[in-house]
Image (cartoon, rainbow, N blue to C red; front, side):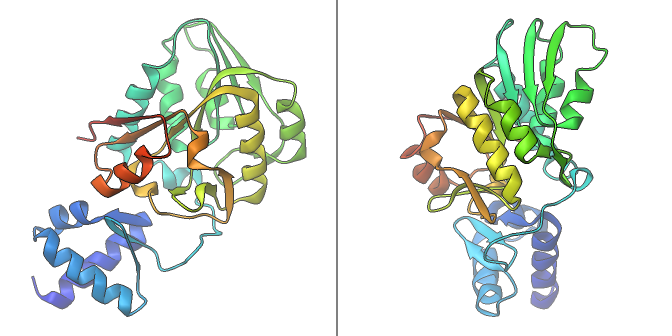
Length: 257
């Protein structure tokens, strides 16, 4: 493959997924990680992508555009399924569970349908649908609010509904996570609603695949240290693991393949 063709492929992958790791690019393009690192450095210098630890993201410094639910469900599906299986191990019958909106939490909800006697608090229309008419008995509390592109309900109505509720644990999906910015989203009202979800829960478990690392949305939901557990896939770069280990009590890396 010619150098120009390879670098065009690198840019295509970053545009398609929003962010991608050096390991993934090297595997997909059948070249060494050192070659990919050189490509990323050059493309970063040209302003065509943003070089981050372990990979690259789109050149926007801070994302303000929220992807649609149908789009996010197609990204990193294998990793999300592995994360969902690992996160479901933290749930026991009879618990009250908070689930924020997003494709990773939706994937987790599908795993939790088989766990009996759960009370589900969610601001996600998609997650609410998953528990409708199932064999297991569940109580579902769905907040009202304004609908986002990710099919979450946000805003003052959702926040007010959450202020009087209490959950054993919240499983929260995020747009991005970074040392300085913490857990972020591009939607200001979703950030406010997710903060209300965090306040309603005794424990916070963040579920996020490796592509969310060093990605920054417009608004911070919580600092990294606010999470009791992070469930990610094992494609998370080693240096990212080191940074997260200093902030989060427990990190679970689910096999991504």
